[in-house]
Image (cartoon, rainbow, N blue to C red):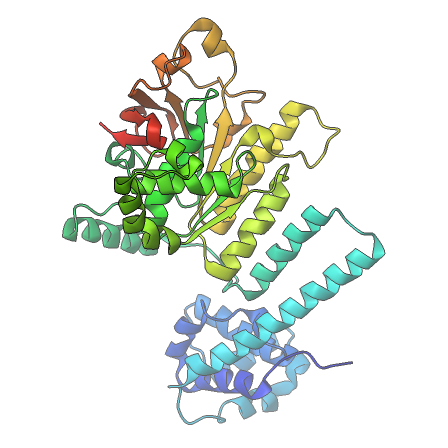
Length: 430
């Protein structure tokens, strides 16, 4: 059997450096976990060092031996002689970060190998559903290579430092704000969207997909953010034409016919390179399950990085379990989208259709109008709805539009006034 990746010399050097300079231990706590050591004896010595550090006691050969003896681990590691041998292996602690990185890299590879063995065994024993298995495989891979220490919390002092840095950045650059959608009035109402689920709702033909394209084009081209769109309704070609129309200010009908006027052709030439170079990923596979979307988003994140995901739209996502009632299926999709946002530390924009009641009652959308389930509005950090009153009466070209913020867990609710430009399927700020 092949020996798993490890480097005992690097492990011994790390422990020896701590004995030489105990202050180094403060640097190692976030860099290394006890389980990162391949040799059990080394792991026990490191655990003793951490325990002593946590109790604010000195860390040296005498105290480590005493602690191991008190916890009945001294004979397990090889006695006092083994610990004493570690004490004089290095003459400087300057390279401790380098040695720790070697130990960490080997541990990651071991976890990756272990995960793959388990997945292979499960796949051979009882073949699972491909989408669920793929999602789990990506999750295992990400966990194996992530910088995960034994504890993943932040204390108040650390959180205050993060907050003060953010405030200083705002002071130095008043225009800076993490939420950037291309609509200033909306940005001012939003918190940083990372880790958040944002529902963008609307009745048929209100412009949900158009607003998605407007926001995504601003994020990718102006901010160079990496954005993935999972379009379960429109094809990649149709969606890309909308990007060109919005960015170049060209009539969508001209693009579809391939008949551009001289001014439109000049506008296209002027924006071609910035559109081509945008870090935009479009997946137009129909009837995808939410697990498949999560798996494909994770693959993009691992290969290219990812800042935001748009899903168009909720009611077209295929259920993972067809025997469940529709309400439960929608609730599961909503929950998975929220988990995707939090676990991947990205913004997830979930487009959704509203029910017919607002049409029958001839009114503006309100919280509770989402079709089939109330779960998305509960899981979402923010719920927005597009409203174009004249469009409901058949006048699609009328420019007046409103973006209603119906729920906002991290800011105020309210109305953002927009202008609808139907020729370019574009929303601009009033």
